Length: 360
Image (tube, rainbow, N blue to C red; front, side, top):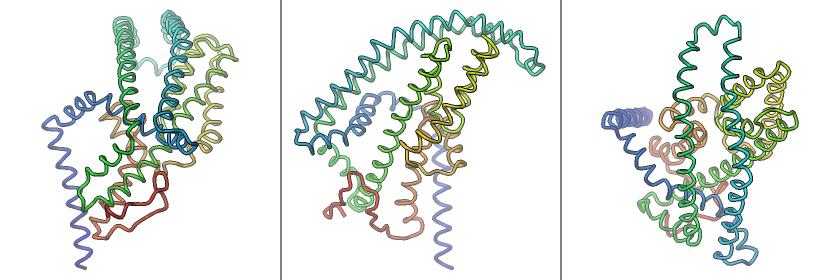
């Protein structure tokens, strides 16, 4: 009885502390400060992410006899060349199609107004049209500015990641020393499990998005759909949002298709449905391999919470964040709450290396 009371008390204290932290952080604007801090540290965080993402590839090149410096140069030169080729080839096409899409907005608005559906009366279409006309240009200019800001951020982050990759082993040792010696063993185990799952998830998400974009561009192009590149990009980006993303991407494509003809609108829905079926039943199981095993309720809860805190980026990475939080809870907080000593688990470790005995 005493043990059950101890467990219940620890669980209650944990949730009360979590609630108090949220209330205090919300009252003092801590989340706003965290957002400013994350934006300031954006290049370093992006560089850390890129170096972490390419470390397994660099490690494989090292196993083939190349030095770390040569491996890093080959990987980052390939990445830089790929990005440059995508910008040189794809950006002019994207720019031209966006301009054509903007010029077709009046036709889309006229089509929506011509729909004789009673439910459309609840929407203030005149106000929406006025807002699009007055604010659309401003948001377009702001979007172009954000795009070039992202290019600057990516360039700085890529340079930082190159130097982090050159000295990755030392960076990893420094990272492990952040933890108190008492919890260093648990810290290493949790870090390796999270590192393994994050790498599998991000690699799978990258491959899945590229394949989905390529399939969408090919299908829309062969079908003679207007603005195929832009629409394929919209479908690929919205598909990153779990559960609701595919429907968000289908909506503008269907509206654009029906504004041209009934056949093209139906074809747009068929193409979206076919792409989703192929991605969900063939591509995703092959690439992701159930990297994140989350209950749908937990996933939807994560979308709501992190979408509210971090916007679209939070919605995209909500499943990954929830998975990492579950690992931290199960391997660190749960043993403390339940007063159970963490056992060594060698089933999933990053790079399959063992825990150093000196840090236990």
